Length: 280
Image (tube, rainbow, N blue to C red; front, side):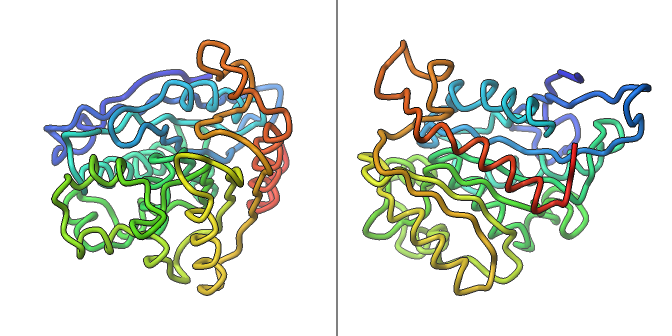
């Protein structure tokens, strides 16, 4: 495996003030087994309310994707007091870097997904819906579409800035005095178009922090735009489940161990392989 951390500002001079780093967990090829194989890849955006990035939703998740034959890349993006669009620029740069180095990292550049949890789900969905904002290639020096993910995986995501918003995430992303226009622009159920990539979404019905309506609103918007998706609403579960196992439970918190919701990872990786018509 190619396991290395990269500072994004080393590749994108316009990010000179950014401390964002991308950690690669890229599966190496074997001379004995398909030496020229090009695998799917996934860019992981941990959650943390745009105030921190959770280790519980970073390397443990990456290793599960790797175990399924999908190379993973964890983005440690900027958080408050950094404001939008810093995080979107960093996610765009990370996706573009994955494409640029696809040969070195044994990736198929047409099989790149973005995966996000909670506020990281908002960042992942921002990349999926706002990838074609004109300011992004202008700021980063990327080719149009170089930052577009081919799929989104949204795990109990923050989506709406409306009635069912997770206010803390938007306060950190935009500041507590954000205008109604700023909030509407980042209420992502309003930003879905036919150019938004297919999505895998999951949430728990009784999530006490980020209401399940966030995922339902996104699914409805995808449906209206004619974008295919795979949706899973689990009956019960607290927020921040990550892999729903003891490997990611904070201090062994039993609420974060949820055998039923653990199925999301297997369902997700199968969905990705089917979507990309990829067989390991």
